[in-house]
Image 1 (cartoon, one colour):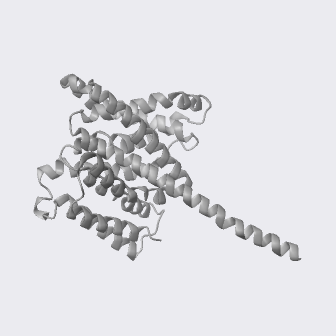
Image 2 (cartoon, helix red, strand yellow; image 1 turned 90 degrees about the horizontal axis):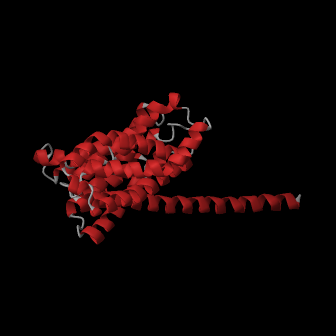
Image 3 (cartoon, one colour; image 1 turned 180 degrees about the vertical axis):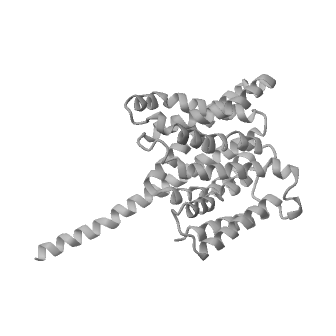
Length: 312
């Protein structure tokens, strides 16, 4: 009897250790993915139109799709990805997560800062929660509605620069407005990416989604290749394509997908909670753009709202 009690105590002592290990893996994973994602915002601002945006998006996703294509083809031949049943979800995930979060973000970097991009993208967890509520996946309580209102207020504060009358100005629509579109696309991708081709491996899905993103980016990229060939095929551009394909492409998206499979869509969207911090640090260190008071105020509202919305 005494031995049985002792064994039970040993099991109880082992559980927190395993839980602590999983928590540490999650924290490290979230930080790495957030930093990889933030590097794309720094790239968008640092290039500031010197590399055409849709050409950058096209080559970025082509590198990912081609690099992982052998894995995707092997799984298609093995029957793990029946294209007849999965083609539309794959195209939808590629459109929302790769196309909308590609060229539009790079175009936005011409007229808005990396910190703006990160703070607006930080609205994605709230948007994911709202979509989940509509679909019946999550119940939204009073605290979550309050958090949503705070987060939206913070976004409007940042986008307007503290001047609501400029909210719908052409310059705002051309910059921050594009990031809002990308944020909405990322929210849809967050919910869809683990449901499209669910039997495929993480890397096979990445290849298929990236291929779809490259396909959607191709028409605009061809126009840029025709009108500005010197910018599209410069050494600077090629370096940007390789970096974008590997760091904010393969590493960021694969890491995000892994976290999604491990912790679920809503929790994984919290990676954008760390995005503004990573973006602010990288923006200051690389671009010399420190955050302003309006960013701090808006960031507090957005991140506080996200925390309240997802507290449960």
